[in-house]
Each structure stands twice: as C-alpha cells, then as structure tokens.
Amino acid sequence: MGKAAEILEIPATITDRGQTTVPAAIRKMLALGKRDQVVFRGLANGTVMISKREARLEEGDPVIGKFLEFLARDMANEPDRIRPVPKSLLTRGKALVKGVKINLDEALPDEEA
Picture 1 (tube, rainbow, N blue to C red):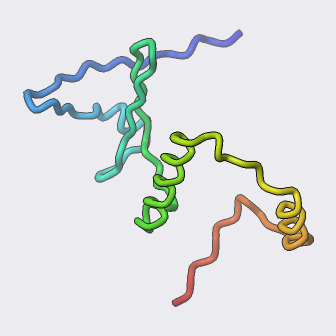
Picture 2: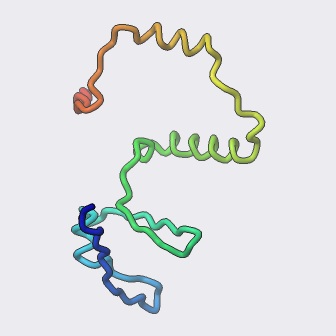
Picture 3: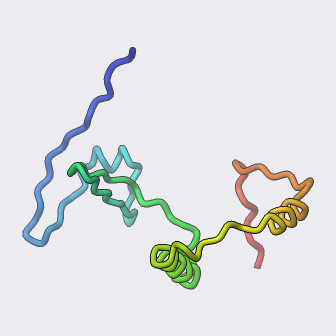
C-alpha cells in the first residue's frame, strides 16, 4: 500500500467583514487565476470543501440559466409530475444520429459569424 495522502493545512484569518484570502498554495493547487471563482461545499459532518468553480455553458445565456432554475424548482416542488422519456422519442433520436461519429475529446470548431 502506498504512502497516505498528505493533507495541506494552512491557517487563514477572517476579517471583520467576513473575508479571507485564499492562500497561494491552495490557489496553485486549484489552478486559480485572477477573477476565477470558487465553490464552498459544507458537508453534514462540518467539513468544508473548496473547489474551482468551472464555467457552465448556460452562464453565457441568462435565459437558459433562468429556464434551468425554473426546471430545478419545478422538479423539487412537484416530483410526481416527472415522467420518463417515451421510448418512441428515444428511438427517433437514435435514428437521427445513426452513423454520426464524434470524438468527445476533440475541441469544437470556432463559430463563424
């Protein structure tokens, strides 16, 4: 069995305004640059995790973001209304992309104006 993972522990002070600085070693570890954002996740046991906030596709379009928020709220408020996708729609979708080859690791082409 290999060496146990080391835990990087760096103290930081909270200001009167509730702010702190993300230590340089943590910024490097998370590949954080200027203006990047982080996400804090508080777990039930009191542990707090911090990670780099990855940009999401809908961030560029506020309408899509609002629509997705609406869907999430609706699913949470009325879960009994959620229905599976009909088999006929899945079959139709598969037929539409039959023979189409894609490489998910390949960069998308630039959009032309």
